[in-house]
Length: 209
Image (cartoon, rainbow, N blue to C red):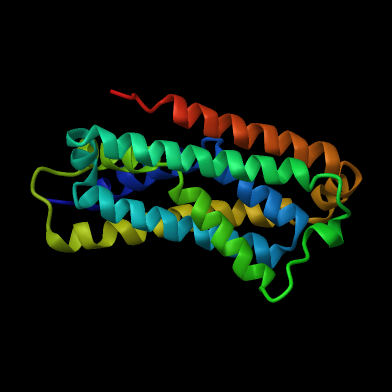
């Protein structure tokens, strides 16, 4: 039967996976330092929702579907990698803009834009679902109650949102924001190169056969 130890093991593994550096960390930290604490927390919630969606898909067996239909796996990686490259190019292009001008987008809430951007970055990386599926497969007990399975996505949401909220709170504090204001062009272009590189790497993982 499932126990508290199973919960703790799975959530610890999920936290370790969330903490590992990647496009999600770059996105939340940049939003928090460039915009506001509220934007950073909105981005954290977007990451949490994306994680919840992937956890549900992993439990529903999408990973076996990706294994069976290689073209679908390739398509998701190419699309996801393409989106990360797009984000990287946009970061590079807007790097030299003054901070206030770079954040202007008439007719759209900045907080909503932060939430949406983070969610799209989270779901653009199909490797996440493989990570979740691997953790579930190795740490779930042999007999899994329905209530346990139903709470796993919620646990993923709490872990992802909690960790990225910590990131948002840290990067939206005064010192990181002052450093960002001084080196915005260099920082944004560095983030752009990293994001584009991660996108290229994700596309490189797609095996065209």
